[in-house]
Amino acid sequence: MMEVQISHSKAAPKSHLTGEEFTKTAIVGSSQAVVRMRQLISMVAPTPGSVLVLGPTGAGKELVAEAIHRESGRRGKLISLNCAAIPAELLESELFGYEKGAFTGADRQRLGRFEQAENGTLFLDEIGDLPLNLQTKLLRVLESRTVQRVGGREDIKLNFRLVCATHQFLSKKVETGDFREDLFYRLNVFPIEVPSLAERSSDISEILTALIVARQCEDAKLPPPSFDESALHALCTHNWPGNVRELRNVIDRAFILFGGREVLGRNVRENLLHMRVPDPSQGDDQDEIWEEMGTLAGLSDTGSSNDLPKPEDYRTWFDHFDDIDLRCLIRDIEVVLIEAALAKYDGLVSRAAEVLKLRRTTLIEKMKKLMIER
Image 1 (cartoon, rainbow, N blue to C red):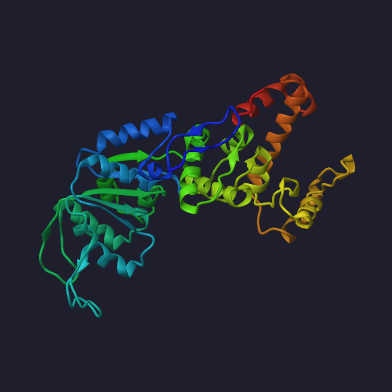
Image 2 (cartoon, helix red, strand yellow):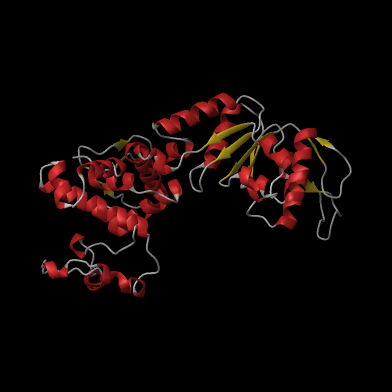
C-alpha cells in the first residue's frame, strides 16, 4: 500500500489513507454539513424507521444508505435497486419476485428484492421515478410487511429496513399527482439531506482530493499528479454541478494529463475543468494544437494589448469545441483577475477595486463568495 501526498508545497494536505481504506470509508469530511449528516445517520441507524435520503445527483446518497445499513447492526444484506434504471414493465418482478410459470420465460421461482433484503436493508434509489401502480403496492408492503410474488397467492412475512433516495422534490410531485401523498408521508419518516459538494467545499482540499488520488493510484497503477495550493484553491471555488462524481472525473483527468507532474491553479481551470490540452512547455508535444487554441482565445506570444482576448474572439468557439460551461468560465475569469489585481497591489483591496472598476464593498463581497484571500 502507498500513501499519497497531494502536493509538494508546504500548504497542501497529506492523505494517510490507502485506496483500500478509502473504499471502507463511506462518508468523509470535517465540514459542518457532513458532521451534521453523520450525526443524523448515527441516530437513525439502530432504529427500524424508514429513511428518505435527499440531495443532488452525484452527492453520495448511496453512501448514506450504506452507512445506515452498516451502523444498523442488521444481519441481512444491503440490497439496492435503482427505480429509474429498470423498465416499468420489469420493475414489479424485480421488487416482488415471481413464481415459476407466472409469465412466459418464468421457468423457475425467483426471489424479489424485498425478500433478498430479509433481516437487512432495501435501498430504493430514484424513488421519485417509481410508477404509480407500484407506489400503491409499495405502500401496501410497508403497511402489512408482507409481499406476494408475481403469479403467487401466498403472503410472505418480511423483516427489512427501507431506505429511499431521490434528487427530485417529492412534495412537488405530490402536488402534480405523480407521487402518492400517503406514500410520501410513509417514506418521509426521517429525511436526511446530503449536502452538495459546493456546500462542503472545504472538504475538497482537506481530504477528498487526497482520498480519490489514493484510490486511483491503486486502481489504475498510474503515477499520481500533485496539486499545489493554487490548484486546491481552484478546485474549492468550482461550483461542482456534478458533485463528488464530477470531482472524481476531474482527478481522473489529472492522472491522464498530469501524471507524475504538478498541477497548478490555471491547469485546473484551463485543462481539467474545461478540457484543454496542457501547455507544451510542461513537456507535452502538442505545439500545433495549443497554438490553435491560443489563437481561438485571441492570445499569442507577442503579449501586445491588441492580442488580449475580446468578446468577439469567442464567436468561433463552437467551431472547435462541443460546449462551454459559461458560468464556470465567467467565474474563473473573475478569480484570476481579482487575484492578479490583489497581487499587483500587495493585497490592498481599495486599489484593486479601483483598477477593476468595482466598488470596494462589491469587491469584498466577491472575494468572500469566491473564497479569495488578500
